[in-house]
Amino acid sequence: FDKAIQAYDQVLEVFPENQEARQKRGALLYQNGDFAGAARDLELAAPAGKVADANLLRIRSDAALKSGNPAKAEEDLNQLRRKSTAEVPWVKEKLEEVRDTMTEMKKRLDEVEQKAKTRPRDTKAQVDAGKISAGLGLHEKALVYSEKAISSAPANKAGYELKVEALQAKGDTAGVQKTIRDAEKSGVNTKSIDKWSPLIHRLEPAAAVKRQ
Image 1 (tube, one colour):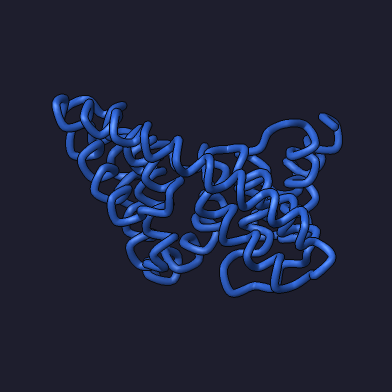
Image 2: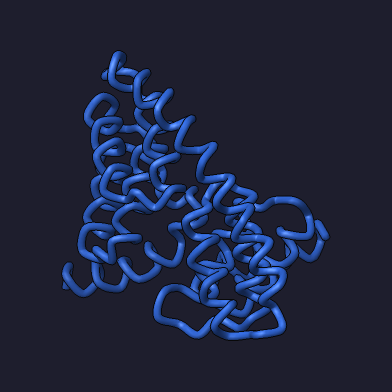
């Protein structure tokens, strides 16, 4: 898998918006056990509003579930159920797993939120609470925690990543662009964040036009 993944790494370094390469690398990452990486690539391969085939939805939902994002898994599983009747038994089983995972994550969120509340300057506690919130589909709450983390540590990479994800989930494109620019101004190496590559790729032509 490694050589094939490296080949797609090279393609995506030059063409970060190549959705076919994203889908193929995502499938390889999934097979390689990198579920978070697979979920990111497969989301970029068919973002909201784009047509996702049944196979992509199957892999992406399982990758999302295994990487701590049951809310996204549930969304994809419901799409898959509408798209393919053949997948209904598997979808039913996975939806039960989603519900169990959400129950456990809600308990964990209560614990982490208590820690974040008692340690407001602890950026890790804020980011951890935000990540669990995002996994449960609580994007407004995730956004609040991301802003607390950034407020405490203006160059906090994890805080900016969390904020961009929350804004993307809300469909706030302008907010995403502003956050990436703010991260760069604060000293974050934005180009080292692979999942931001397509976003930065879109920002660069606009910045060039603005300078002219």
